Amino acid sequence: MSFINTIANILDISSAIGNINSFEVTIVTTLPTENIDTHTIYFMANNNNAYDEYMYINNNWELIGSSNIDLSSYLQTTDIADWAKAATKPTYTAAEVGALPDTTVIPDVTGKVNKSGDTMTGDLEFAS
Image: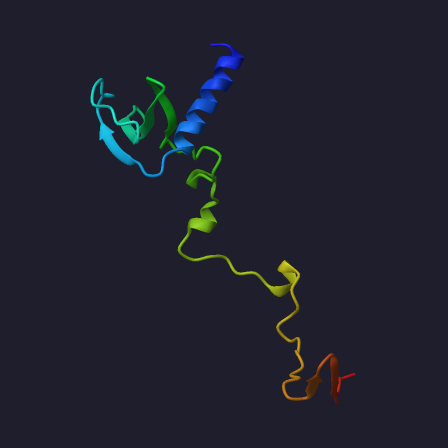
């Protein structure tokens, strides 16, 4: 099939799908040869535990999609470190992860600052 014919075929499929106001979905073991409904997407099982999706367009069966899902680029359980799968996780100190130490005092400023519009007023005391 030439490139032009391929493009024309894609446009026919796109146009046929775009002109559907409603459609049916039917699961079949083989594509029908008679009583074909052009407003039906026919799902036919393939060898991948999924379905190929066909429509009858311009007197021909056209494969319009598939329910196959390729998860090969997703994270596999074999790629996850054993510690992450363990019931108990490791613990780290603040210094090991670059956090503030446990002894850091975070000042409580609740109720000590007033905001009016874009202006804040109040008296804050900072430990030296």
